Image: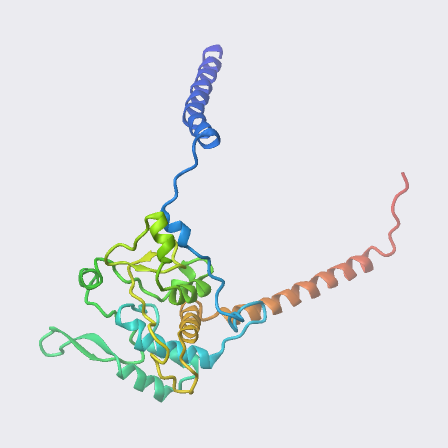
Length: 285
C-alpha cells in the first residue's frame, strides 16, 4: 500500500513538472515578451458589414426573395460557373426557386455534363437532365490547379456555411477588389505578389481569385433589375445561401411553431399543477 501510494505521488509530481515546464515559458513570453510582428497586409484589411439593408432572409422572420434567388442563379451561371462547381445541387432543385418543370428541363439541357457512350463505354458528354448535379468546370483537381495559378477553385455548394457570417462574407469578398493606397503601401513596404489580387475584405488582402464581377451590366437580368456590382454580389450571395441551406426559411418557421407549443405546454403544466395541488395545504414547521 505504501509503495503504491508513493508511486502515485511520484507520478503526479513528474506530471506537474512536465506541465509547468511546457506552459510556464510560453506564459512568460506571452506576458512579458515583445508582441508578435504583424504583416504589412493587416494594415489594409477592412471588415465588411455586408450589403446595405441586409438580406431578406435575415432575422427570425426572414423569407426568401425568389426573384433575387433567380437573379443570383443567373450570376452564378454566367460568371461563377466558369471556375466553381455546385456538386451538391441538382438541376431539379431549381424548382424551389419558382421555375416550372419545363423550365427546369430546359435549364438542365443547357448544361453539358459528363456521360458514357452507350456503345463503346468511352467517356463523353451529354446535355444535362433534371436529376443531374451541376457539373465541375474542370475534369479533375490537377486541371483546375493548372488553370488557376495552382489554386483550386472551391466548390460553392456549402460556401456560406463554411465561412463565418457566410452570406455577408461572400458579398464583401465580391465587392472588396481594388488597389491598395499607394502612399500607405510605399510607407509599409507592401505590394501584391504576382498572380494574386488585392481585396480589402479578404483576411490577408491577397487572394488568388481574379475579380469576377468587373463592371456594371456584366449580367443582363431578365427582370430588368439594374445589374450593378453590389447588386450582382448581393444576389449571388443570396443564391449561395440557398444552396447551402435550402430549408433555412422553413426551419425558422418551424421554430416559431415549436416555441408556441412549448409556451402552451408550459402554461398547461402550470395550470395542472395548480389544479392538482389546490386543496393541499403546506405543513407547518
